[in-house]
Image (cartoon, rainbow, N blue to C red; front, side, top):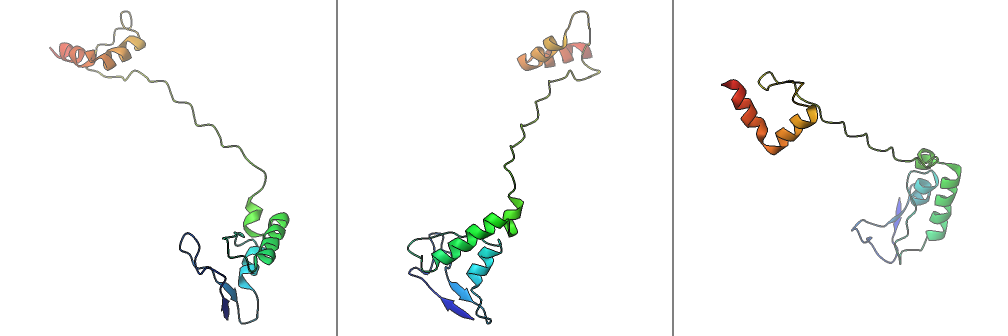
Length: 124
């Protein structure tokens, strides 16, 4: 295995930036990018092998290799589901008189704090 460095040893995120060749003299960085298992990214001033790696990345993207095969056509994010309308709870302690109370009035009473007073009145 052979390791080579460029001008900087690390990128701005403190990740190592080596160029690596395996025992078969295969340029591992190029191999990962050309098979679509890594994305070609340039961190200046580390551009010693950029033309080779960049071309491998373009070729992989154009042929849909590796991770690029999952990048088909653009899809739109689905809209979030609609918020359901609030419903009137079926509570045996609260007076349910359909002639005098509409569900909208009941919900308004809950939010106005009258819910507890009505509940107490029905318990007496």
